Length: 118
Image (tube, rainbow, N blue to C red):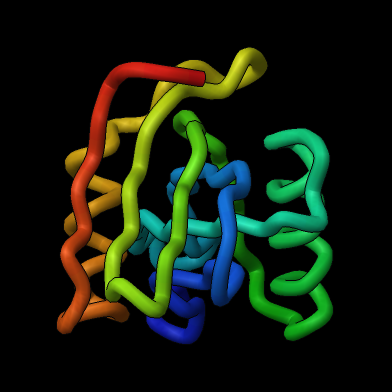
């Protein structure tokens, strides 16, 4: 069930790569988009690999498709998140869609995006 997958999982602070992923339940065909971003991952593909490994351990029959990426600057002391840039491998994510998803986990934050920068 895609509802069992968290909408957002980001590192608590810093600037890091992120990806927008479409998750599909292979049984029901239900789908949703999720956002993942980790400083420890050097490449956007590393984030996708980690998400797939983590979720597959839970025994859910899901498919994960990265639909784009970029970077996030997370400044918790200012309650700000900036989504920007692109992924060389996956292209630019729909940053507006990513912002809308991120806002569900960070309602008190100023979450913005820019299509500029790498």
